[in-house]
Length: 542
Image (cartoon, rainbow, N blue to C red; front, side, top):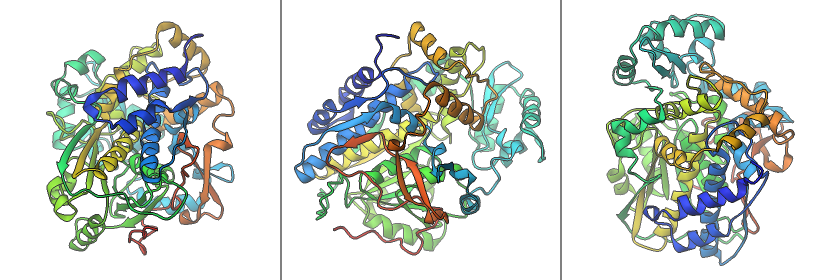
């Protein structure tokens, strides 16, 4: 790997696999800005995985940075340099684990745990619940990834697993015995169609590309962009001189977990006013909230009530962007789809994020990062890379975060085009579309793979390492391969912890891109669910 360079490969991916894809319709200004992005960092990759994870996230981070710089030049007449640190871009993929208070992980804060616990409606971390999300072998020899989603109850009922207080190892043994009683195809249809639970067969790469759904979705670009005629909406006029690219832009966040919230978190750090609409009647992943709630005012609105729908419509009426990350068609069933939303706000940019894509026979299914990875063959690739004859979930929530980065870039482009023409956009992104694009970037060659493994001599993983276990192992691996990287103070942003009832500052990983003139910071700190209920109005533009 002596002649391999992460920064050069990141730039090549940016230019050849993103900017030169004419289907994506990049403006000349965005293309020019992306061509000038500078990459810095360690020249060698360090995550023990066969695909180009660092190079991919670095290229996509540069895309966001370049698009934002093009907007800042259009709005303010400024020229500036954009730099992406490939090390920080890699850490961005594990950002949900990195928030700290006084140098200690936020999970050690009793104040945080007390404030966040209300979102964990079904005790997701309890071993008998946690192990409902894992890879198990069926009686036909195929491997299957079951998933608890936000509530392990339906999956446990389907498999005949009783509620119990057992250890992680005991829980795994219970699920192993239950899943091996099923044929994989029967389990797949029962989980997805009868119990409405995410789950999938762990395909090989060959099986994935032979699948009828893949035959349809692989023809799509990395995101699906639909232009719609609408009144032009110029950039908001602002008087501040910090040159925030998205100053005055208003974003409605209707998302949970990681991918969708990452879209809006990046828009927030570029200056957008983001109102996250959630409901304390439903669960969320409390561990993700400190990171992905950064920069957002979180309000508690139940869209299943007339009052909630009215409040939602009031917010949407004056918004620029709406990002929907819920189960496919869930928002439409509540009366809000692309058509009805434009009746409320004709120039609204509407972005949807899901697992399987928005066309094809499996588009109706819900899914998570692990499901997208197992379905697309990445889990088998990871297992084989580690010398195993079994699938292993990819090591980081890669598709989640990178799909979110992609979504932010396409929304910035949509805002720029809307400011200059009578047009708005539907922006559809999915974990699976990203994973197809990601695979097409190619893998490391044998020499490079050997070098990566030697850089991580202590790292071991198996099929039974669910996401929680894998997170812990990956933090240890990064500490071994890149000592001191996780603690680099230059990589973090500090903000008040008061909205988590924390007496002190909260440190959150900063975005991977930097500008020489535009300020990149959040309009508000991270906070618990519903912390801004008293102020669900848009911030006046100044």
